[in-house]
Length: 119
Image 1 (cartoon, rainbow, N blue to C red):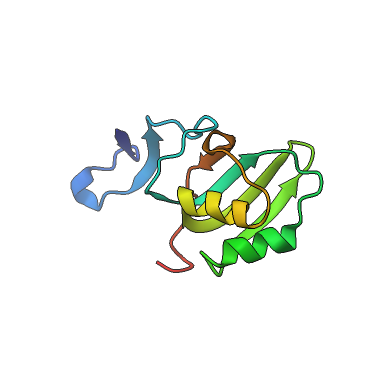
Image 2 (image 1 turned 60 degrees about the horizontal axis):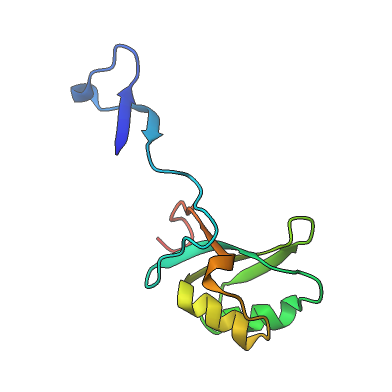
């Protein structure tokens, strides 16, 4: 459910000037709340980050999405991935890279995509 508010004194028929959007859906999902069979662009994987080889992980991710990138937040103990891939593909890529994880370790973040990269 999304509520749209118009600017003060601005009627909808006068060209609809959007000034505020209130979204009633949560902005973050709980860890493990992935939905198999759907694409996502940003993931946080909760795991021990010691010894992770980003080059190997990047190669495995890029087999599914050539534009995929990953980085490590060692303070939070998470691997961050930006890629257009299915949840199962992410799990498979990490397994191929030698870092298997369970689905409940994966947190899908809401997209912040503006559509400028590829529409």
